[in-house]
Image (cartoon, rainbow, N blue to C red; front, top):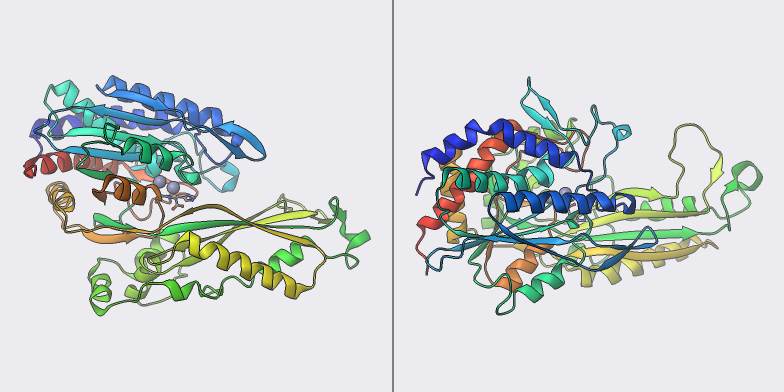
Length: 479
Ligand SMILES: C[C@H](N)C(=O)N[C@@H](Cc1c[nH]cn1)C(=O)O
Ligand SMILES: [Zn+2]
Ligand SMILES: [Zn+2]
């Protein structure tokens, strides 16, 4: 069933108000991974609560307890559980999204202030941290509700929302809430399917529906030795240096062509079938797409299917940074006393964090012993999440495919995503329903990167897509 024309017209007529809403959200620097921004994550929860109430939702902010971050015990931001509609003859869709963002500083290399949305009239880009990940998509749902409220038209389905403020840091506290509310009489009772808009098209032209995500195992490796930072002129050559040990260890994790060197990790990957390989061949994608989105000709393979599989169905190991290392401008001649290297492994079926954690710790300890260093090593898992794969033939995907064709006049690609949203699997397992990823943004949006953007057309057409998807769900008979 197509969405009513008046809904689509309303979205076009209110595009500038919707962009203002996104600008207001981007202006709140809700960085979940840095304790000093925690009040802003709370402010963002309050902003979203108000927005949801203003468009007719009942909203319950749920406290999620405390966490230890940067050595301090602080409150976790609340999850927002919201709902609208309770008609037993209609299907109930649960929409999940997150209102926290990755860190961003102008000095990271942004061309503009990351927390001030720049509306670039020439390119149509809406540039700002969180524009595509995930404030644009979350507000897309609010826009859909506003249109229905203002136009006085009933929603085609009942809606429940679960929005969190810790997704970029392992969704701490959320699994427990989902487990509790999935019980009989809980908030999630009666949900027929889940829709998550928190990923991107593969390229800049073809919409997609996503039926898989990689999981993640995130590690912190700390090497400590001297009681304090040292002068390299006075002590260089006389003591074991933590940073030298760490760089040695990091060089043992992965090769420059991406081969993971930790024994046992690659062996756990589910074997590739011919039929599965063919699926990658069919996707509208070329090596030039990845090179365009990263802004350089640095793809590891020239084979399109290999590149896609490297992103979607094989694990990868990335080195992220070193806490405690000298990183400011200038030429400080310091020997850092304690350094913590951070890396993560994106995991795929049949790998789990429970299997990988001991393999990683044992290997690092083994390689560290070989250095014969007198420094100390510790390995911590910061967070872990399993991979997820869904059935893309389910009615939830049929509805999303019809909606995509209605809005974009294109058949969507079926993709798996290289990123991780660990809570997806929790919803699938706890609620026992199909989960769909319906992206709003494009492959070159630069989520987590500098100059993150969402194209105006993706925000506006994406709002129409979310609304139209609800109509297509509503048109499928409730069983
Ligand atoms: C795909 C989603 N938009 C996303 O960016 N997820 C993050 C989740 C995460 C896990 N650890 C830290 N962040 C990601 O895939 O990096
Ligand atoms: Zn996200
Ligand atoms: Zn993200």
